[in-house]
Image (tube, rainbow, N blue to C red; front, side):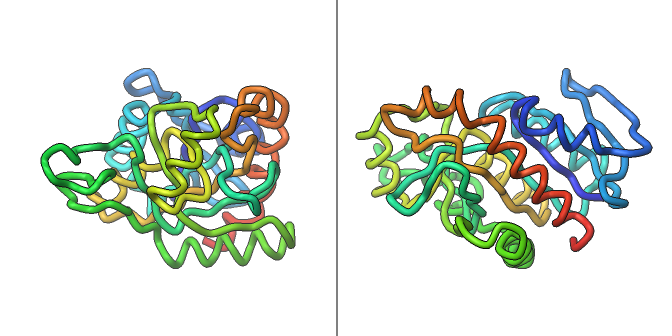
Length: 229
């Protein structure tokens, strides 16, 4: 079984719509849809926005359904001149840009307990997603660091700061916490995001305009990807 988590309805509703043999369970106010997509057993959930909501959803999904891999899908803000609206970004690793214990000597972003700055995604899944996306879309496919924090980045200066500090190519609000849950549970994971805005001063305008089309692009990719996992 493959676990799939998106934060918002627009990020998962098209996947749920193509699911066959669907069953539904609600746990801690999160609804889990269990069935088949393209013949592959899946569990799909809308976690809600932010790191805590995503972590609750991911840990529950792991304990209840025991997926063999977990994929976080959705939209993100792009960072850098080569990252454009509609592009696909695949996580080589995740950082939490709002984690900061530097006052006691840690590097900014350091996650105590697992003692990592960057949580690495599954190399097998990253390579599989990259090759599938390249074959499906051809261009606009990027692999790199995705930065997570409980902030919607809509400021050009903050965008540049995160990119410079962490070498990130995209930012969002859930992937890093899902990565942490997967890491401590020894569960393969990857984050796949379509760029809906460039996380700058126009982010709120671009986000509203391009979220649905970017999410649809991820759904089409997932339908191609799932039978190969």
